[in-house]
Length: 179
Image (cartoon, rainbow, N blue to C red; front, side, top):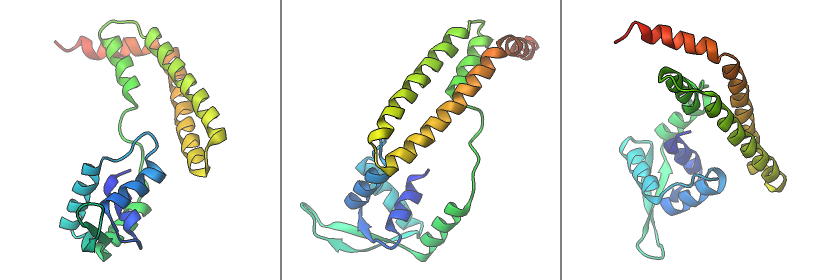
């Protein structure tokens, strides 16, 4: 998810200043990842430069006046394009994949790496499951998303663990011809 698209979505039909946009973003998407004010204002400047948002006035603030932004027709078109474009996860699996492969390439054991990661994932799933009971609908759907990804990673851990020998041989064969 990109911050520019999030800000465009929050501006769609609701002209606003950066401080309010940050609060709205953090309220719906900022769980464990709040935006920094600098990121909000830098992104708004780029959106304005690219013709996707316009400064449409000033609103008195507690200090200096706050610049109010509105989405432009080009911004609406860009947001609609982004929303309608399906995506696939990018490239190779997570850092765990890289750790396992590099540990094998370095001749180190991977069972401990796999076991430790499995334990961390299972503990995170327990924490999320407990938190889901107390959350609002936004929290619950975000937790469901994270749990589904952890379940997929746990499935991969089981498969990788079962194939360590085969993977070790494949890496050795690949690296054997290189100096």
